[in-house]
Length: 172
Image 1: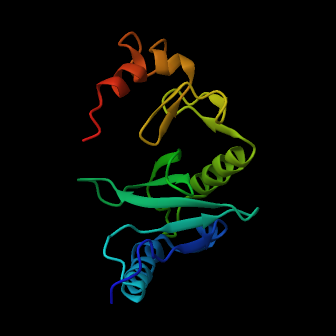
Image 2: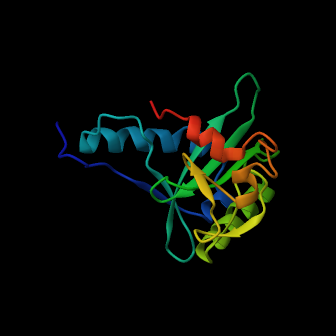
């Protein structure tokens, strides 16, 4: 079946599920649901369209990534609903009960709470900034405080900052 342009199926999970659902469910059953939805609407691409719903009802995109060459290590990435702003990228290993560690769940809830108050952490130095007012620049889904953007602090300190990295990007 060919789907109309733009048709896809989102899978929305309450943020509270991260506290109780075994991590294996996210890796197996959730993937089965994604594939069934993809078939149902005739979506040709492999985008997951996973969403977290906060207690306020706002939705956020998320994805789990398996660390290469390491057994049982993952990271969770959380973005705004459109995937345009990276809110969280946090590595973890499932706990002894096979769940996402409570520290990670609390971090997810904290970052979502900050976002809903118009606050975020710079994607480099992790200083608290007002979003979007204090964002000096963006590189893909990352956003940066003025100090990291200009190269006064952060990963590209003294090397032109993220501003220079972005300027060199071809976006090809």
